Image (cartoon, rainbow, N blue to C red; front, side, top):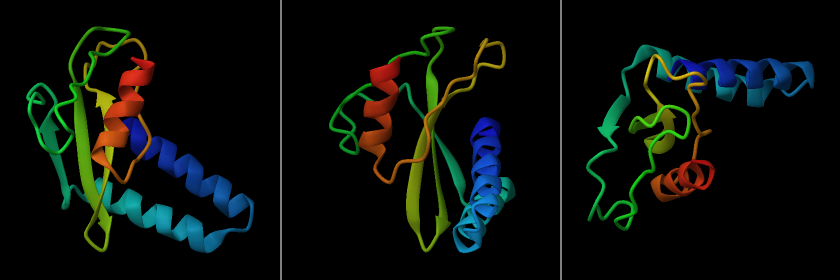
Length: 115
C-alpha cells in the first residue's frame, strides 16, 4: 500500500504543476483515506477460486518473488470502491503493484497480464 500512496503523491504533485488543483485535491483526499486506514480492508488473494466477484479468475503469483499478492480495496470517496493489487513480500526486489481500478476484475486482469 505504501507504493500506491507514493505513486498517488507524485500524481498529485504533477497535477498541481499542471495547474489542475481540483484534480490534485481529489487525489490528496484519496491519499488521506488510504493513510487513515479507516476505509481500507485487505482481501486474501489466495482464496479466489469460485469467487463470484471475479468470475473465478485467480491471481498469478508475483513474477519477481513468487509470493501471493494481496488485493487492496478502499473507498476514498462516496462509497465507491477502488481496487489495486500488490506484492506484500517485504523481501521482493521490486514490490510491484497495479494502479487503482474501479472494478476488481480489471485489477486482477491487469495483474495477471504482467505477472
